[in-house]
Amino acid sequence: MMQFARVLVEIEISEDLPKTVQFLNEKGKLMEQLLEFEWLPTQCRGCKVYGHTERMCNRKQTETWRQRGRNGEVEAKQSTMEHVPFLEDKGVTSGAIDANTQSTAAMDLSESQEISQHQGQLTNASKQVDELARNSKDRSTSEWTTPKRVGQQQVYFTESHNILSWNVRGINKREKQISLSTFCFVNKIGLGALLETKLRGDKVGKMMSSFFIGWNYYSGSASEGRILLIWQHHVVSVDVLKESDQYVHVCVKEVKSNKLFCVTFVYGRNSIEGRLPLWVDLAELSFPAIPWLVAGDFNVVFEGTDRVGGRTITALEMEDAQKWRALGLVDELRSKGSHYTWTNKQANEDIIYTKLDRIFKNEEWLDLFPQAEAVFNWEMLSDHCYCIIKPGATVNCGIKPFRFFNMWTDHGSFKDTVMQSWSKPSKGVGLDRIVRKLSTLKKSKVDWFRYGDDDTVYFHACLKQRRAYNCITSVVTESGQLIEKFDDVVAHFVTHFQKIMGSKSSASVPIQHSCFSLGHRLTLDQ
Figure 1: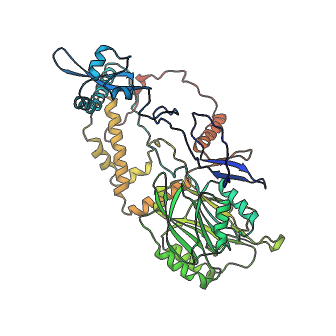
Figure 2 (figure 1 turned 30 degrees about the vertical axis):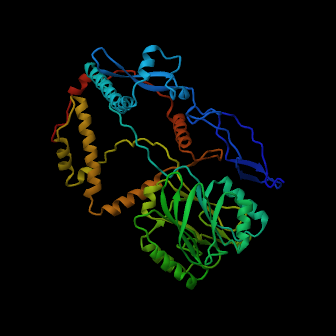
Figure 3 (figure 1 turned 90 degrees about the horizontal axis):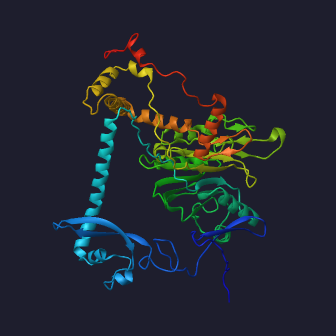
């Protein structure tokens, strides 16, 4: 009797086997199903061809052999030959090898290992000789080549799945569960907290096994029906550290990048007295050295502008929330989208909009995920906005150009720092030496900023915050299209300014170097 669905999947033999398949169910919803293979053919890890193992592969490989010279010296060489393992085991080589190669291939194992160990050193030495030859050739010519630095790769948050926080206001209905599953799939959710689920007992496991295949979940006794954690086990691993009826505090580790951080998902009570334990626990959950994110529905306003319509916000409502934020443990993550996150869905003058959902992070979060941002948008499934914390993609942004600010000259130690750096001995001749000195001077500027400010910690914290808010991670075009990929955002801005600035043109008059001797010139003291 067939106990599970069998699907015939036709793919190209050169492509990787699929792990999931997507399909539309009977309600027209897009679903994803994990695949399990009862049997797979043998595949060579070297040539990626099916039917044999890597040991039995007959493809060409690079073998290391040696040949004794007339003086008995050992010469290391490389030869490309047909690799026939079952013949080599019997001491027989391929017929494509000539007589000299056959005698050489029969050398003892110890000598072969010795040559292999020194092969890497010989290769590195050859590269150094080639580099010296190129440098010598460059010096003999009159052309000047500007030294270029290779940009370091700036890690933002690996392009993995997003983090979700959403007050769904009950998900007992099957139709709502299906829509929620589709939402998580479309928005690439890897870790999420569903608030006010109203699911208890076996209903949680039934929903997960039916519509969240391949997901793990946690519903504790203290937070049951209020906070439900879901995550894809192949994306992140989650350890629950502490929980109450108003929050669940977890440690998260990314599977691919092994990045470690903490997340506290919050669903606060709707009374001032009921939220008092929440503020006490959040104050004790401070992590000064670990990236920390606090997300959820706090059920309270933090500022006087967080409500439109209804009764006026009083100072008593905001007092506890503002005291907790004043501790300086976290500050709000950069966000976009809707400012207000809840509505009573009334009409005309009775409608009320309030900001109840927020995302906070500590300074270490910016060190690990400097480009992360929160997106608040409305969805028909709930009267609350959903919030998606989007990680930035790993891109190579290169190196920012050096900028000089006139205010630096007003600092008391500016001239001494410059002269101390400039007087250091430097290699090179002519412009090469000047470039090296300028590079050293810029490094001195970095050290000056790092150690010269009396309030270093606060200075760098403000700098990180400013960089995070000034970064453009997405743009909406005139046609309403949202562009979020880094390369596409850069291309959009370049194209826009090319239309304004015009096309590139070369200088019509060459530079007259004799002009440099005319007029006033800066002296060393200046």
